Amino acid sequence: MSVLVFAFLIGVIAGLRALMAPTVVAWAAGLGWISLEGSHLSFVSVPVTRYVLSFLALGELINDKLPKTPSRKVPPQFIARVVTGSFSGAALGASQHALVGGLIAGAMGAVAGTLGGAECRARLVKATGGKDLPIALLEDTIAIVGGLLIVSRL
Image 1: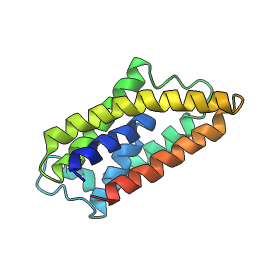
Image 2: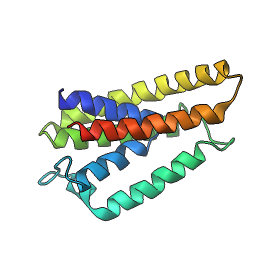
Image 3: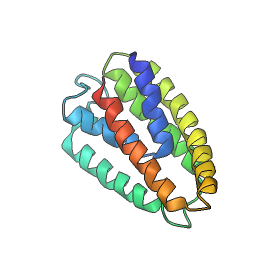
Image 4: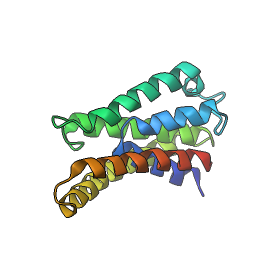
């Protein structure tokens, strides 16, 4: 598959969980699954980047379950997802000398993941009688496993 497809898909992951996409990309770079050597994004493979992003992603997973957490579709959250999706897509693109294409594909994926994820979650919560926690945990699982599958397939 084309790196741009993977960049789009990692953007979708950012739409589900904003920090999961850059976290799995950082781990992939650190483990040598993707090479960012020689690119402007080579800092992503540094251990401190992986650990800081992992800590922040864990915080996001917890925060998502709190009752006062705003919708992913409000401007600050939506913008954050597009930024992290763009960044993650750019990193995947850079690993194959397609940084700009990856950036654009990641942004498009983040928009699709944000809107599609919100809609799917709302429908599943309604279908389960208003129980949000199981659906949120399912979404977490999809974001984590999906992100790892994406970066391990490049």
